[in-house]
Image 1 (cartoon, rainbow, N blue to C red):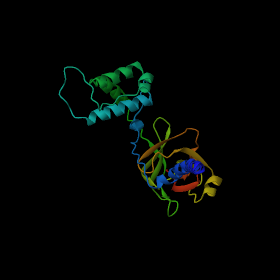
Image 2 (tube, rainbow, N blue to C red; image 1 turned 60 degrees about the horizontal axis):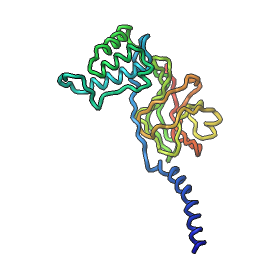
Image 3 (cartoon, one colour; image 1 turned 135 degrees about the vertical axis):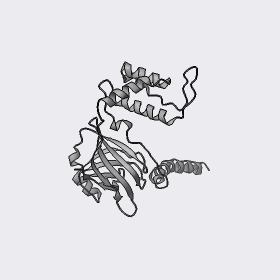
Image 4 (cartoon, helix red, strand yellow; image 1 turned 180 degrees about the horizontal axis):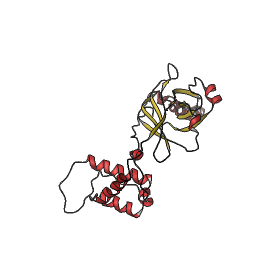
Length: 246
């Protein structure tokens, strides 16, 4: 009886990691993760000299939220609603004294200081628009690994670059990654690795609109496709060949 109990315990100990690995491997085939990120609020905004991009982003988010809320009768004392946008401590810490005061006044119901900052930004001239540098549509890698939607690389007004996935959907899998690749339309792992690629980020979700920052040291002239790649098994799930704008 004792030997049998030891055998059962040993089997359980062995099965636990096997079952855990099997779940990690197979569960993405039955589960989907949806992401729906907006294009950055501040992408079209010109950054005033006394503000940072993070501050502009907070202003735009706060004002957008206020515009969506219904008008209410004035109260004797300022009150905060549970749905009010609260800037993060990091943003408030890094903000200039004028910016902190404007945010605090807007949160208390007085948007005059915030309006003044936005007016100064508007008077500086029309804001530059994000520029689409390259774009392409995702295709299926094979009959099982399918992908659709568009991938677009943008140059933002602050000089940074952003990869935007829109109307995106791909077959889910374990540890999917977003790659920028030199081959224009790789069909296999060998072709991808021979041509060269840059790991951008872990895929946020297999469905939905998503933003990915592109590091400044990446040479975009050498990137000709966006790849959704299963890193553990080195399998291409979907490819978006990029066509350069202009």
